[in-house]
Structure formats: C-alpha cells, structure tokens
Length: 439
Image 1 (cartoon, rainbow, N blue to C red):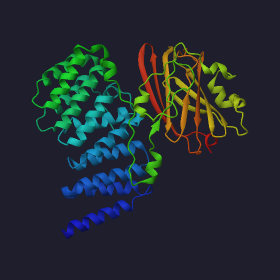
Image 2 (image 1 turned 90 degrees about the horizontal axis):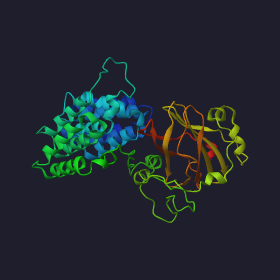
Image 3 (image 1 turned 180 degrees about the vertical axis):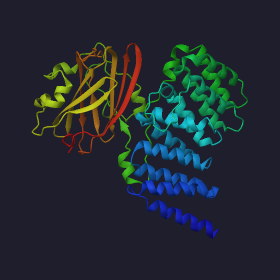
Image 4 (image 1 turned 90 degrees about the vertical axis):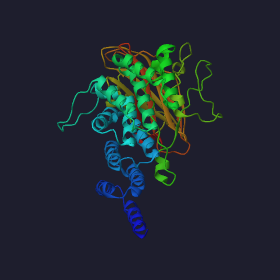
C-alpha cells in the first residue's frame, strides 16, 4: 500500500512539473513509465498525459502522434473520456484527417486487440478513410508510405466487427464506420449492405438495432442516405474544469445568422437561447428570393483580392482612424477568401471577398461562420452563390461582429459548394486576426 502511495505522489509531481519548455522530454519519460508501470497506474497516467499535452502541445500533429503512442502503450487501460477527447482533437484538425487515418490504419492492420485505440481508428477511418485512400494527406519520407484500396479499409473494419473479443462499444464504432463508408466508397456499397443485412439478426440488441436502421437506409430511404452519413462537422472538445487557460481557449462557439427583416433569411434572435454550433452549421442559409443587404452598402472598388492584399486598396473603406490590414482567411484548392475590415467602437464589419482560381465555376456556394459565445455575429447573405472560374469575378459578403469586451477574435468557418458538379466542403479556424480588429 505504501509503495502504491509513493508511486502515485511521484507521478503527480512529474505532471506538476510539465510546462511548454519540457513537454517533449517529459512525454518521452512518461511513455517509458506507462509501458513499465502496474495496470492500476495506467488509467491515471494516460488521463494526466492527455491533459498535459492538451495544454502544452507544440502542435496538433505532435499531439495526435503522441496520443496514438499513449493509447498503443496503455492498451485497454484507457478511460472512455480519453477516446472521445482524442476524436475531438482529430476532428478539429482538418489538415491531419488523412494523415491520422494513415497512421491508425498502419497500427490496426497488425493489431486489433487494444480496444480504445481500435475505437479511435474505426471512427477516423469511417470519417476520413476516403482521404487516406485517395492520398489527400501529407505523406512522410520514412519509406513506409503505401497504397491502400477501398476494399482493404472495409476488410479491416469487418474484421473488427466480427472478432469475438471486440467489446460491444468497439463493434458499434466499426459498424458506424462501415455505414459512413457506404457513400465514400461507392464500389463497396453492396458489400456493406450485405454486412448490415447479416447483423440485422445479431443476438446483441444494440448491434441488431443499428443494423436494421442502416439496412432501411439502403432500401426505403436510399435517397437520403448520403446526407445522413455525410462527414461530421468539427467536434469541439469540452474544456477541463480545473484549467483556466483551457476554459478561455476552448470556448463553445455560437452562431447567429443575418437579422434582416427578410422573412426568407433564418437568424437567431438575440433574446433566444444560444443553439449548439453543430446544429447551426448544418442549417443552410436561405438566400433565394431575398433582397440582399449588401446592395445597400458601398461596393468595394477593387475586384482583385491579391491587389487588395498587396496595395491595400480596400483600406479606403475603413471609416475609423486606425488602418486595419486585410487578411487572407482561406487560400486552398483554388478558392481564396480575403477579409477587409472596418471598425467602429466595438462593432467590426468584415467585407469578405471570395474568388475562384480554378478552371471550373463554383456553384451553390454557402459560407458559414461562428465565433465564441461572448461575441455576437451577424452573417449577411452573399451577393451571389456562383463564383465564376479563372478569377473572372468575385462574390462579396458582409459579416458584422459585436465584441463588447474587446476579446481576442477567433472564428470558425465552414464552406459548402459544388465544384464541377461534385459536392465539396472545407473548414478552418481563424486565430490570426489583426490586433486592431479587437484591441
């Protein structure tokens, strides 16, 4: 009993000494301890390592890599909240989606005995397996890169689902992942439907219920199946109750849409309770047939966001005394969004200009944005939902943000559009607004 007490106090001391300067070294030391310690220490050690890395990790990629090592080392001695928290970190890192799926697949193809790791891997492959198969991720120069087919991803998830040692929770993750892949991997759709039909008679009630519901999506409700199993929006990790810095950093976002008088435009009234961001981000902005408030505003003189950024032509729209530099909010896959700013007191007006540098026009463009709940946002509809090809024209949109406490501005954006008649989506978190926007 005394030995257990000494080990516990020593472990607590080690975690108390971790900071941003020694996080890498201390993580390596704690990984060695995690691999050698008794089983009763593993759960606490894993949880403390996750909290330390969440607070001091130098980058999201390093954080994900180290947590995969932690789950691999700890085996089945991992609490459920760590699984869900790691899924949240993976979800909130769009640049790492394909990379993480690749790393987890490498582990899963050799070992499916570690249930928490298998759960994270199943969720990741279900959400982002298509990015991994198509090579849409940053590949490492370690000589281990390999090509995987759609059938191989389905093989390994079916293996997890059929393995008798897998827990019910792990099998639920696997069957959900297979259903997700039924639209991401069209060539495997019939095979996945057969798996669902087989499990509709499973002795486990939970698996049976899910399989029956999923089978009905293939038959009675096939037309809505793609929208039901589409990629999930970014998950937001719950901040730790005992970490003030995390509470400030991981605030829950909320979104309010355009509060114009037009009845065709949805918005959240200021006196209504704040609705969950994930629900709001799934509600389309209805702009057809409405009078666009942008027409009542002064149109930007420049039509080229690159020129705006270099020469600052749009600065003349700033009616305040402080000049605020333009900002490139997104520049990806030929789509560029440039923000220019006007600030009057605690109200920041953002003029968003979106251009398309590809050879195909972008249609059905929808821009959504959210800010921390201590701020309020009004998102006006764009002057068009079609962006012509080859940078020939831009679309403009106005965003107004009220920041009464002059807090540092953060924004999460989500884009949905059709590119060459294929549905596309993108997400990003903006943390580098000019200081004049809020200070």
